[in-house]
Length: 218
Image 1 (cartoon, rainbow, N blue to C red):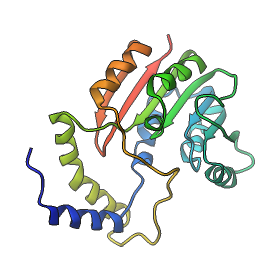
Image 2 (cartoon, one colour):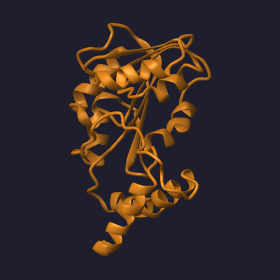
Image 3 (cartoon, rainbow, N blue to C red):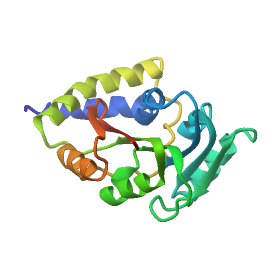
């Protein structure tokens, strides 16, 4: 696949830096569509500033967010109205989860920071029978399909950033939940390992360098 000229890539990077937007929040409505209209307890792993946890609270009886960064956890608590049934804890996503079961578990742009198979095993253990696990993840592009989606996403990313910022440079950077790092697993490897732990899981490549995983605990 032909790589765009370096000067074009640099120009695109400059444009995207001036018009940033939250790729993960873009998928929040899609995540909600995978869930029941009402459910009991929800767990959001890698909850960041709490945007998704607060959305889950519009349907859940109670929501608990877990993040390893104490500063972002404190920010999430400050942004959450006292009346909302949402709590946040600073904890390790694998060893620090509450000893409870949940009707819904979500994990957004976090699992590539964790041992993948171990994380899925922990999530499965905490998911109640009949519950739903939804993951929005990042993978390392390796296949022609990956590179094709990446090429399609580049101009759409710029256009979306321009539209969301109404054509003006963003006044401040988009808030980040943590220091990001590239994903090291390819999508085929993710699919293979996911199916070994979560038989019947549905995985799809998505635009904007993401993939989704949905699994229902029968």
